[in-house]
Length: 373
Image (cartoon, rainbow, N blue to C red; front, side):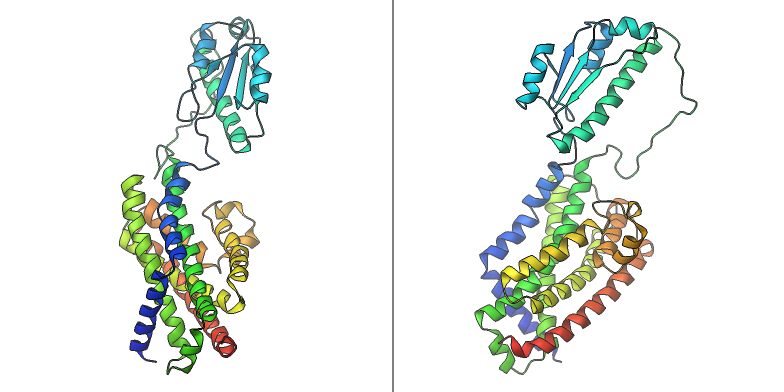
């Protein structure tokens, strides 16, 4: 093995990437526009939902309920009649419609337990479920506070005091931006490494490498470090300019420590990308294989859903995936301000998984390099 060969081959990979405008555009988009869109337009988050109110009571408590809905979760409520309610919801103008019945305040103060009708347009599934819970909580709180002024009501035996750590205002952008960076690091490292190998075969340059005095280890190592440098540079720029600059997401830990963990993760995922590149015979095949592998890695790593809510068997299986440990590492450093002593197990896991994936991909690459020409 010659370090000079690995360096020169890596420079060649970078030059090839510079001549590929599609991959360059993908890198720029993934670490700028995609992160901003994921942070500001998370589909599962309630944002500016359209709501209408049918006020048949015209009472102070009804006015109080109507005034409790305001941005950013809801648009200002629109006052409508009962006859307009169905037509507006059928036309998609309102996602929620509240109908406050006549004599609601009188029945409330008399202790008769009146009801309020909530109509939900369930075709807007991303907002329907979350919004219904928000509305029930808001209406319940306003009605309870109003009733306390006029009559004694039962108080709960326990006073729950909520203290949210790491994200006190529950800003969805703080979570969405970081998770999108993590997902795009995984995506780009796999795609760039695998595409670099397939590009060699499709352009015929693999034949040149086979007659040169270089080994498969040097060829593979060059692709790993070259694509890794690109992904890490894009990650650092994205964290500084997009996440902290544009979105103003506070970072509680060391960015340098996070990038060190990202380097180990990229080492594992680029090896995975090269292995997929040896299996696929063309870029369309490579794309399909990446989808089959990438979706489970991202969905089951703990970034979208907490690992504790998954079946125990899935948790054990996903411990062998580098994304699981990278998500734990990133959340510990960026959200909780953990230092090296707090995340060293994840560093060890990533180094071990990366070494296994690199060795397996190298064995596969050596066995197939002769047939790729």
